[in-house]
Length: 535
Image 1 (cartoon, rainbow, N blue to C red):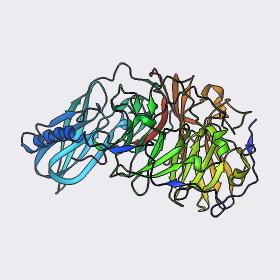
Image 2 (image 1 turned 30 degrees about the horizontal axis):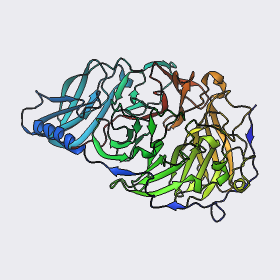
Image 3 (image 1 turned 135 degrees about the vertical axis):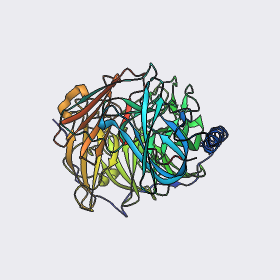
Image 4 (image 1 turned 90 degrees about the horizontal axis):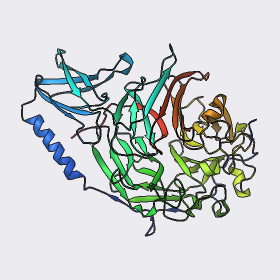
């Protein structure tokens, strides 16, 4: 039986909200970050070599320059270069195993010197890449460039795909399913389960498409390092545009064990703000972990704002927290695992796993706007922020994201999130651990109410329950949902399902055989097109 959230409360959009101290400068010894430029010399050497090849006149439509893995970390990409006698534009088509898995994109500028980034190659075979060249009078030429790639590493995950015959899968144009791990290599596969991109540079949790087409990418100093404390702005070819190095002094591990193992500074999420800066969830080196965010200036690497959730919530919530214990003595009272920015009112929406709560706060003041949680045992001072409505209380949830407008009502906001359904502090103890599910909810911010719109997962039962990690994303072309049950069978299997609004399964990928920790933290559909690459 589901326990429902029915708190008779008020929504405080202004005036009555609990305020927080927003620090604009961090004290010495807390989170420290620097803009690292040491990588530039080595990358420039590569690009000087590539430019020289482009300019020397040796490479033509009969003799292409081809460099597989041009930046050394992206084995299923290439750089193709050549000159033409007259200005021409180019369409690149990477042949798939069928029409649905073909990748095709155009470069519309008419040029005589062509540098073409190639993405979406298959591993361990000769790929057929078609170049369709068109001059300014509409005359076309077609050339085929064969590109050989190495096989996938022996340690690579096994991907087993099942598709429902006759049902269209929502892979948008040039889209793949991207696997964002808790550790090890990120990768992407097509609807047949064939890997079409991966990076040899390890990644953890933060893998976010930026407005300019680049990627926000959390990694380490080296793959054999202990700490994820390097944040990159990079692209699918592996070119670096910015690198931010965080001091490892504030890092913490996810396991809570005294033996450190891998640690992280930026831990669960990072997003791009409308001003172009980066908002990151971080560990600040204190006794309390995973309860702080920093805004980093994109160009300088300077921390320009800090939001400490201990300044947002009552002291008793963290000082008296006992729901989970760690061997290392740290207190993980909130465990923030996602943040999303709401452009409609300059606010952010947070998911706090260990409070079984989704919270909206004003970005400028950190004042609470509302809370979604089972409210009966929240502190009295918090009761007025709890939304009222008949929905299942979230439990240990992940990845709360804002959906496109669903009802044409400016007073409402639709959210989708992955409800792990494990009661940590305020969750539904009766339903806890019986299933996990994707949830779509609708919040009326004018009336202070919330309602359930759609769910999927309860029908799968305990075999798909995941006590940690997971994600759920709305697919706008079909209104289907991509759900990642990332920690099935105690972390041995990650299952990614695409389901329609009627709960019919359209697509399923079961991923197994990965190293411990390399389970699927999030699964997203996004384009593999190289939008922003340039010398």
